[in-house]
Image (cartoon, rainbow, N blue to C red; front, top):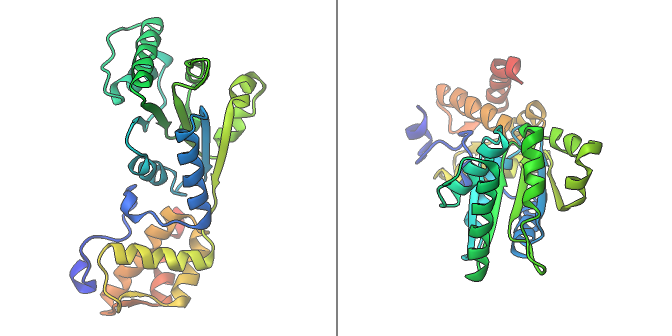
Length: 269
């Protein structure tokens, strides 16, 4: 609606997980570096946690784009599956259509696939988003996947990405075997006020905004306070604030625009 008014090529504050718009705070960069290292060095289990809307899915997609050649990957966005369904989904996403129906045959097929990749000198990584929703059976299946290894190396690297509830689930006594195998843990924290300003600037420029389009400092403070630094909420507020500025015929978002956006979306925050 306001693209022409702000001279934008695309909407800067969509809530879809587009890696092009990922803004790296020091903590986001640290998480990316640790995950890249963990996969490349075959560390086995890695865990990424963060609040709802903190950018975990976007980071996972960006991670896939940054992995070097020679690493086969699968991204499972909805892991609320049975143990056999999970195995089938992993095989399918790795480009190895499942040929069996029972868990034993699927595990055998996956093991054969991983050994074939190892002989080629390749690595394999599976990213499981929304991992806090994994069923107990699926968590046990994931633990068993860590047994797919040779005497020297892990054949499969597994990234569990989820909300803070994932940490609480992994803390249960019955999951201690899985917990003990986690080699790397990363947590995405909310953005501080300065980072919110840089985040808005970054997304505007990626969307093609010229230099005269932006948010005044007072508007940034309102958005940071209302969103508590959660990127998804920052996006919702900023989109609505830009709409208010568009209605007022301005190319800079003022404090009153951000306040209006907050008032309109307060019930959702």
